[in-house]
Image 1: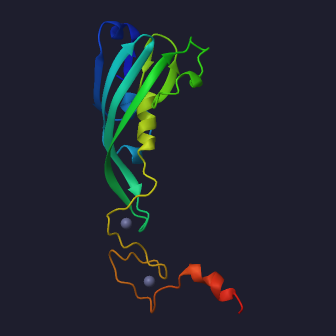
Image 2: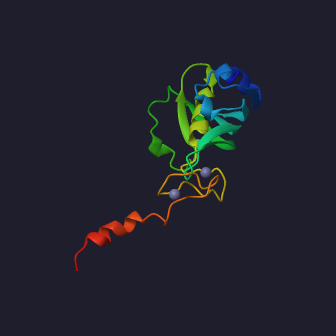
Length: 171
Ligand SMILES: [Zn+2]
Ligand SMILES: [Zn+2]
């Protein structure tokens, strides 16, 4: 369970630890983003009205290589820190907490659910660029063959499209 009763945090800090498939935890993610059960660790503490949740999530996702376009599996471990504030303090604006570097989420009711935070953390773990391996040779720009597995039959290296504009210029 990724839910915590507010009351249980009044007396002491809590640690949530879970290892289960996203679906079983009520987290909607595509199968590519969680090839393994999600491993979640989260420390919760209450300070006044604010609950801070801090921890990490770990699993394995399928990424597409930027160079050869092949799918490959990659482990990730991503950290998060979020502060939950009760919804009723609606007069407070974000400007009042300029010093906060972490996300502030408003919540309602007596039960705090960190599932959405876990989902967002996984989504943010998808890298902008991914390589199946550091020295991936990618696809040939001419014939499209995968240069990691076959040698290219192209007669000459494909023209660099960056020069095309120059060729059109008349001197
Ligand atoms: Zn690759
Ligand atoms: Zn080629």
